[in-house]
Image (cartoon, rainbow, N blue to C red):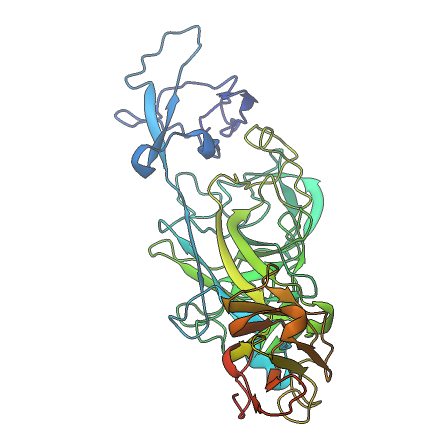
Length: 502
């Protein structure tokens, strides 16, 4: 709050720090003096007051923040408008999930039997999704700001407010923009708006990577179209300390700021880094800090998500399942290493970070599914009546010198086959499930053993991709009549079918 004080030629204080009690801020000892010249006005500004926006009822998507002002003085002062609307609250994040290449749908399906890598011939399998964070209004994303924000009445469009040297709170900054550790700057935020992606139900055997900076939708270059350089950079965690500021020469250099993570490798020219563990079991999270914004436009920031795993279907790795991602701001009470909770976060604190956010508007979407590689075979004629029997054999050919050889990304597989019988006198146990059939082996049996008295057709669903079969129908002992045939491949999931598609 600004106002004059002092006497004679002695300069009076014109900045006063408020004391927070609950939802009140009290300014003590504020002088109320007439303007220096007739007809002039004296302006008192109250700034750097934050509110618990999550507690504001947003009817129709927009809520209002009101403040009441009262004066306690020995001299009566008239207030014409003691109740004011000082802000509006609306959800600020519009998050979505996309696929590289504009318009492809997600979630996608990844084959358990096909490895996904970051380099080499399998790199095309690696980019799996585009993580999109967009503003719901033009000033939702904010840079951190700097210690030069000291002009009263100015709008800085940053997470920091009016910054004041020498008034308690905030880190001390040297001329080189490094933190000294002493608390000498009031109004300075700990960092800019941070964007968080939390990945849950990550399948065993899968590793995740994200781009260290924002990308365009073709996944080939960084997002340098609308800005001199990048809009956001990956940081080590949602409460990691910034050691620099988003000033010219730092943000515009396209390099990371503060303790921002550096790329561990690159793919298609994009720097990527592994995703670290999250707060919950079997979860992982990545956090980026906004370093460039346009307060006059809706900003949309995209990050690339990459996946890598070594196919080991014979040991059920990677484990089948669907992974999801939750979009949010950061830090949130549920985050990793965050010092505040849902209860304590909204309270005034000299130790909690600024800004801090609620979990209430997080957006969760499925990303991809690891699907087992399978084959469905149709045996159109299986009989065990009138003196006839049918021999059924299935071969697991996932080890060969063609589709699943040493030079292929397809792994050797193993699995069971489920026999579903359709016709007269189907067995009570339907389907019949074979033992696990190892790669490069066969399983054979008779209809008289697994489906006695049956006549009809049978479908075998095998939990490996390269299943082939043979059926042999004959009278007992094959003395008079006999025939053999290959089953038809109804469905194969995993990779492109072999040339011999039967």
